[in-house]
Amino acid sequence: MSRSIRALAAAAAALALVSACNSPSHGTDPGKPGDAAAITRGVTDTSVKVGGIVSMTSSSGYSKKDTDLGAKARYLRANAEGGIHGRKIDYIGAEDDGQDPGKNLAAARKLVQQDKVFAVAPMSSVTFTGADFLEQEKVPTFGWGTLPSFCGPKYIYGFNGCLVPSPGGTINQTWPEGIAKILGGAQGKSVAIVANDSDAGKFGIRTFQQGFASAGFKVAYAKASVPATAVPNDWSAYVKEILGSDEGQAPDAIVSVMQTPNNIGLFTALKRGGYKGVLSDPTDYDPGLLAKDATRQALDGVHVLLQFEPFESTSPKMAQFKADIKAASGGQDLPLNMHMLTGYMSADLFLAIAQKAGKDLTLTHFQNAAQSFSDTGTLVGDRAEPKGQKDSFGCGALVQLKNGAYEVSVPFTCHEPIPFK
Image (cartoon, rainbow, N blue to C red; front, side, top):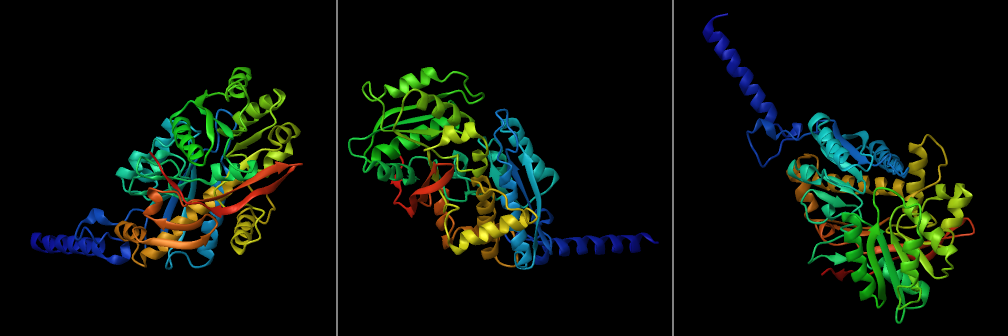
């Protein structure tokens, strides 16, 4: 082949490459015309690749592994219904971060740099050190907005909004308003708030301290003092301090912003110490916990905060959720838990925004769709973006473990959030 013919061939190949990179069918970002690197990561003509980050394991034995099943269930139904404008969801599953900050960042890097996902949905862990990396790499990420990283960044979304806002945002009032209903009002009533000694725990204390005070409670105790790395063997010092926190008396309600192993230890010790008031936490809505007598006894009477419709609901949306979980588990009737719903609704919000983005799914189109997104009547109430990156969607319920079963103690409802200071 002559030099001139080789040159023409090379030029033709280069032109073909540029044309392919600029073709809308390859998911290019219209904001960067002519840029070969603008092909949208994880998007092909027929699929959208999505991964997750979930604490499947932890040093305490606590696991959120069913978050992965919940996401899988929602994606399976989406694919059965035709995917996103004809593109199937290629859900590659979730990376296990073991609740370890280093592993969380490593998982984020792997999903982006090796697996080349378009989005991370779900992200469910008590640590989110991978947040800055995912934001920098412009990866739409969806999870339970219980960490500050879900409040403010452009590409990170809480499935029920921002639950730990920065000043200028708002606070969800489901918990304090729900406890007030159980107690017959907040006036003259006191509350103790307990959390782990971690960034998340300290932020939770700051948030809920404001929320309960705004609802009319006297906040008698608010400390993030329980070790975050190991469950205490001896709770006596905590119990003594809490039970004398209201001017030498026990508070009317004690709320724990901790995970199940800590809650079991604390609530058992409080009951042995003679406490008869209201106990509440935001994590122990899990029928699997009822399998062990000791666990069931420790959590008996506890009111659990939910930020979604209870499984006891008879709504069509809840019936669909149950059917999807059963299908994803191969037809098994698994005990439902909040981790399943966390994964399911993280995937659901991603799918809703991606559908709105249209047939040409690019990062720019996705983000533009999110800027004017809203829908109603979901399992977490009414949703709206970018409102949800600053504020909670404001809805929730309380259920109580009673005689070996969960009962709705405060029905699912929405409250006007309060400003966070």
